[in-house]
Length: 75
Image (cartoon, rainbow, N blue to C red; front, side, top):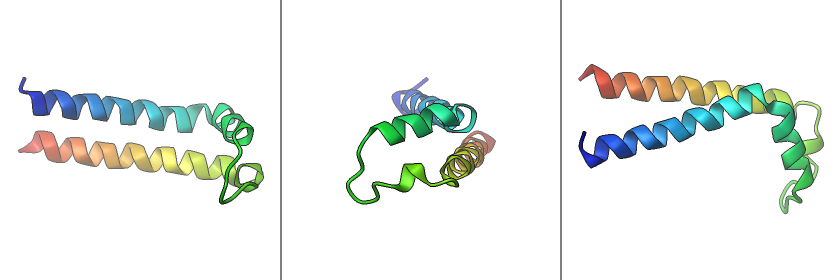
C-alpha cells in the first residue's frame, strides 16, 4: 500500500466516523454545540430543526463518502 492509499484510507475512516457521530449521536452533538458559544449565529444550536439538519448532513456525508470510494475502487 503506497502512502497516498494509506492517507486516503485514513481520511475516509475519519470522515465516516464523524458522519456516524452526526447521524447516530445527534443529541450529544447538539449539546456540544449548545455548550460552545458561537460568534456568528449564537442561537443556531437552539433551533428546533437543528438535530434534523445534523442528521441530514451526516447522511449526506455517508453518500459522498460512498461515491468517492466507489470512484476510487472501480478503476
